[in-house]
Length: 136
Image (cartoon, rainbow, N blue to C red; front, side, top):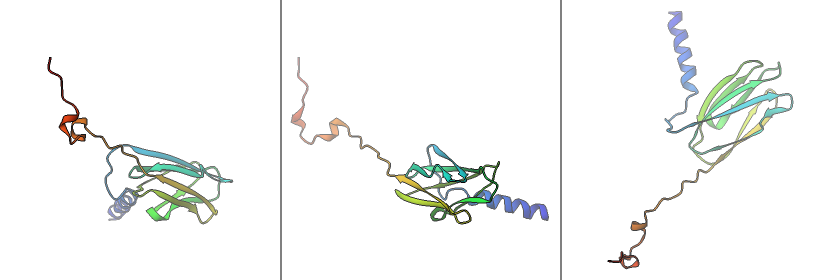
């Protein structure tokens, strides 16, 4: 019985860190280190709609964390250990991450992804007289 409860707890913790929807395409991996001076890097840039996988660790003994409250990311940052978590930022903008115990803070800048519109030349023109092949 204890084994079943333990395995359910483990599976719940793993599922809680996964994004709510499946994202096709690559995953952007972001590493953040907690130091005495704060987070390194303090600012992270990603594109909207990407799956972001966070790796967090610390160089100091005091307990720290990384919280992105808007996306329900809560990760511990312990010296010598790497914590993993992932989420998807659907909308462009700036999102704060912080740790209330150490007063560290930083931001995630989510950029709008530019997708060029591709047009076919033959479908672009509505006037068929613009180009006609010459007969030889």
